[in-house]
Length: 332
Length: 168
Image 1 (cartoon, rainbow over the protein chains, first blue to last red):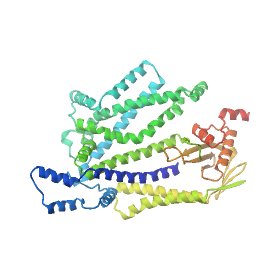
Image 2 (image 1 turned 90 degrees about the vertical axis):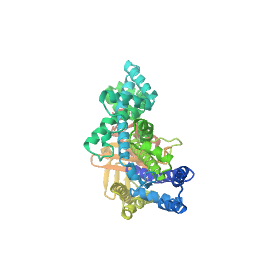
Image 3 (image 1 turned 45 degrees about the vertical axis):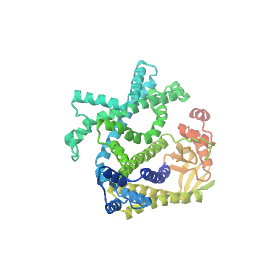
Image 4 (image 1 turned 180 degrees about the vertical axis):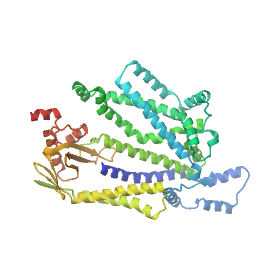
C-alpha cells in the first residue's frame, strides 16, 4: 500500500503540471489581454491613453514578457503563495480572494457531509426494504430532489428562512460582518446562513446518490454469497456491513474526485441567486474580464481539488477492495 | 530450500522513483521561501519519498528463502513457519485506470512475524502458492479480494468449508 501511495503521488506531479499549462493556455486563448480590453473600454468612454503609458502598464503587469516567461513566473509565484495580480481589482489575487476560498471550502465540505449523511441511511433503508411504502415514499422524494432546479429551491428556502426564522436574505452572514475579521459572532452568523445553500446545492446530489446506492446495494444483496451467509445464520445487519455495503460503496468512493469540483462549480449559479461570497461568481467575472491571474488561480484551485479528490478516492478504493480487475488478459 | 531476490532492474526503478520524488520536493524547500502550509506539505511528501528510498534499499539487500516449513528473510533471519500462519492477504495495486501493469503485495502474518512481499520478487508465484496451501491447511478464511487475486495468479484457493473437510 505504501508503494502504491508513492506511485500515486508521483502521478499527481505531472498531472498538475500539465493542468497548469492547460489553464494558462486557456486563459491566454481569447484575443488580446486585459490591457487591450481596458484600453478599448477607455476609448469607448472617450478617453485615450498615450503610447508611453500603455507601454508602462504593459511592463508593469508583465504582459510584455513571452508567454513561457509569464507562465513560469505565475507557477513559481503560486508555490510561494503569490497567485499574481488582479488587473481588475488592482490588488494581489490573494487579497481579492480574501476569505472567499475558505467560505467556498466550508460550503463545499458542509454540502458533501450533508449529501452523505442523508443519502446513506436512506439508500441503505430503501435497498433493504425494497418496494415497501417507505421505499416508494423515499424514492418519490428522491425524484423530486432530482427534478427541482437548484435556483428555484434556493428562492423558496430563502423566503421560508426569512419568514420563519428571520434570517437575512442572501449572503453567507449578516451584513454587519461583511469585511470584518473572523470572530465567533461572525462564525455563528455564517452557520446560521449556511444551511440554506447546503440544502439547495446538496439536494440533487443527495437524490442521485440515494438512487445509485439503492441500485448498487440491491445488486449485491442478490449475490450468492449473501444467500449463503444468511443460510448459515449470519445476522442480517452484520452481513450487510461486512460485504454487500462495502462492495456497494466502491462507485461512491471512485466518485469523490468528481464530487469536490462539481460542488464548487455547481454552486456558482446558486451563489449568484443567493448572493454568496464564494468563488463561483468571482470566477465568472474574472473569465469575462480576462483577469488572467485571478481566473487562472481559481481554475488551478478547482483542478487541485479534482486531483486531490481522485488521489483520496484511489487510496480509499485500494484499501477497500484491492482486487485485480483487468480489461485485457491476466498479467502479473 | 530455494532462495529468491528482487531483480536489480525492479529495484533500480524504485530507486529512480524515490530519487525523482526527493529531487522534486526537497529543493524548493531549500531554495524558495515557501509559505508554512506549502513547506509542510513539501516536507511531508519529501519525507515519504525518503522513507520509500530506505525501504527500497532494505528490499535490495533482502533474500527470501522458501522451504517446505516456511519462509526465512535474510539478513535478519526472520522466519515465518507455515504452521504458524494466521492471516494471508494478497492485494493488487495499479495506478492505471484500465487496471493493467500493476503489482501484487502479499502480506503474511503469524503470531511473531508479519511479512510483506512484492510481486516483483523472483518466485513470488511459488511463495504465494505455498502460502495459500498453508492457509488452507491452517483453516484460514480468505477475503474475496485475496481469493480473486490468487485465482488471477493461477493459485487455487479452496473455501474454508472445503479446508475443514480436508482436515477432517
